[in-house]
Amino acid sequence: MASVSLPALGRVAVCGGTHGNELSGVYLVQELERQRREKGDGVWPIPVTTVLTNPRAVKECRRYIDTDMNRCFSSDTLSSPVTDSSPYEVRRAQELNNLLGPKGSPDAVDMICDLHNTTSNMGLTLIHYTSSDWVTLHICKYLQASSSRCELDMRINQLAGFCQTMMDASFQKSDLTSNLAKITQVPVRVLVLDFTVSDAYNLESVSKHGFTLEVGPQPQGVIRSDIFVIMKKAVDLTIDWIHKFNSGTVFEGGELEAYKFIRSVDYPRNPETGTLTAAIHPQLQVLNDNSDQSLMAGATSLRKKIRGKRSEEEVKEHFFCLKTVNGYCFLKKREMASVSLPALGRVAVCGGTHGNELSGVYLVQEMERQRREKGDGVWPIPVTTVLTNPRAVKECRRYIDTDMNRCFSSDTLSSPVADNSPYEVRRAHELNNQLGPKGSPDAIDLICDLHNTTSNMGLTLIHYTTSDWTKITKVPVRVLVMDVPYSDAYSLESVSKHGFSIEVGPQPHGVVRADIFLIMKEAVDLTIEWIHKYNSGTVFEAGEVEIFKKIKSVDYPRDPETGSVSAAIHPQLQDRDFCLLRNGDPMFLTFSGETVKYKQEEELHPLFINECAYYEKAIAFHLGKKMMLTVPSVQVQKD
Image (cartoon, rainbow, N blue to C red; front, top):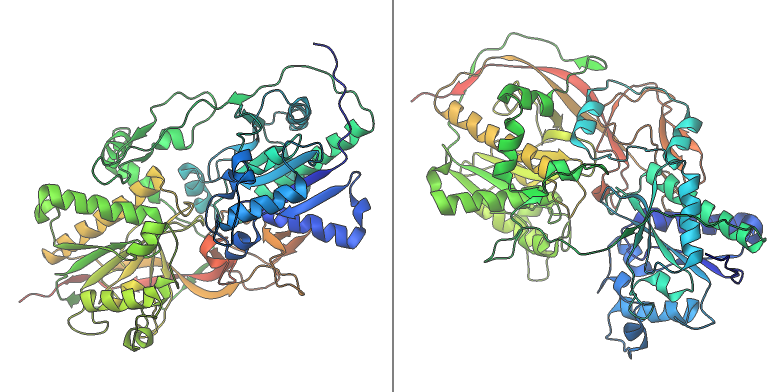
């Protein structure tokens, strides 16, 4: 193939926030703009335009406002007439076409690099719509060569990985420079869609030579410093290549490994309702390049496959063995008499309090399916299943008007409601009437409220008091105690006499992972089994239980003028929930590269690190103290 000479690339745009909840690109564009303000346009060797593509969606931290903006740049859409009633993203796409295009014309910007995140384990992937653009393909080749083909294991959500992380008692000190060097040495893959320019519907197709830079896995609505560093390195290398190209460097020809899109595969669905009936199989969820495994399985067959490899006790140990030895705080030990309590005759399992936490949603739907097929006798005790926030579930959003998990305090439940009251407040009143009233003898005996978290919390039970002996028993799970009066407790489980949340993660919001689903299902099954044994007269012996008590919350570093986040969780802290945080340990990595350290003498345990839903609450993580609590033996009251 003969050498090809092409015009210089004089106009380059780096765009972030096409999807408003993919935060690496949002914060990278903001960081590039900060650098320009401080150092001028000479900060880069070529002129670079920075664009926040979908500002309204970024402000609301949503994927889009009316329609997916990454489908709004086909020639047909860009040439269609728009009015004030047109979808916001269509109107914004036409604005960007005027700014960076017009698409297909000689006046279009030379290159657009559009920045995206994915919840999938895609590593660093360049996506392009044609296999005949030599500029873009040479940039791909340059990034592949620069990555040194070092296989960094990016599977941050892998079950075995987070179990191992939680077994570590404290930070293992490592050199930050070498750590970040490893982060940037990731395999660069190329995905070619092979569309015509007119049919290509994403932003980069507006330019002469554009591509999407996709980096993951990262939950939507979350910024991870390791993912941010990978994206920034790729943008820096792209700018470096363009500078060399414009300066006359000859880039030799050669072969380029690429993946061509062939087709899409949907989830198995219920033929009547269209709802999902399966999740990605664990063997595919963490698949590497050379594996060839079956693609999907329903929850029942998944459980059989996993248990077929090891005994029941070994499965429990693999999922739940989380013992550590450092950082204990002991409560005063005392001899305690056996406690007799009433039977638990009314139990509710609730999912979808947050509509985008899908394990609980699908588990409730699966339990309802079992009841329809097998009747109430499917469980050894009567169980009520509740889809807590149906409107939010339907829209796959955390909530409609306000966080429902803050709507169950006594003050909120006793306040008058009207048609214009927030939907979640009205729904909380309905649930209080169904399952409560809160604090009354008529309240349901136990609520198990199902949640997911993007944090590496494993399987954690959360409740409000250290004196409810029906829940704090010797079980191999983490227990987080908030220790507030029930009247002030604001979450759904506080409506019942003995309620708790089951929190399982890490799982991105809006996604269901089979491994996380199975952990949650196992926990609910064991809870039902415990209640059945308790109601049948089993005496549960006294003993000590490890708990974590929430002490305080920590916010992200912020720009003093704008209030916007200026740093992400440091890679050495990310995914290390429940480990011990010591004076001098790194907490944050600023977008300009500085490390912010923990500067407190009291050693505490970080919880809910980098939880997506806590960004709006100005919480980077909670800090808790580990304690050992002595619990009495417990049994059901005899008539």
